[in-house]
Length: 331
Image 1: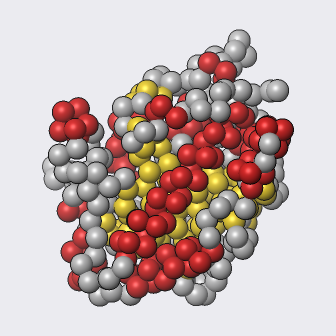
Image 2: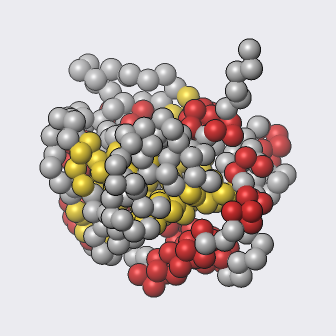
Image 3: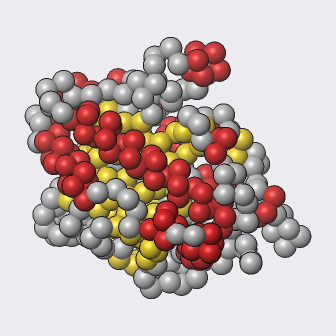
């Protein structure tokens, strides 16, 4: 099996039946892992179906997202993301700057629910560890978004990571010991309709690659996600009922020495209607050392990246992206 990344000029996003990995025999697991590995090496994106998360739960999370983003701005700003150093809470429109002028989207972030005095935060300086912040007047919001959905998609992420391990010629449980307290961030996103004349410097979500190991994305019924191939063409990744979109992030690209590719993508809400999406960004434990896996190194593909801890890497990327983390030059 070859492990050298190629990044082909794809014209569509592959679809994988993940149910065969979850419920099949060893042969099924290997075959699905090979399909996933091929998508990760050549495209960086794929869909999964039969993933085990019910459509009813997903529908209820979207309803909670609509409830939250319908709140008055004054109420949403009570949990503004800049009020904490943990990168959790409400992100107003233009706050995230993946587009030059700021993105045309609002967001709500939550992550692994930990105590304020979490030992890794207090004794080791894990900057992103701690409690979430929740809207005060939305009964059932936290219970649906975190207690049900977050924990369900986190379980799916752990299972998907097993398929990545097999695709990389590693033991199935290779990543288990370093994902005991993972950095998993769930986002509820709201995109207002994009103006008819599109400003390339102000998109719903500007051209970017994701930061963590991989993303599990639920899309509502409105298209908008576009993925760039090596020819510079933007390929639509429309919603497919009953699926998640999975894409490789920069952390996994570093970990695999570029064998798995982190592909540029963007969101333009051309539907003329409101668009919602729910990405889950999965990363390992905060102090995990991200250094090239031995199965991804050979004479033709020597190490490309210096080792770095996962938490330090993620903090550096947040600092580059969020307005509240950037100090204006007053000189």
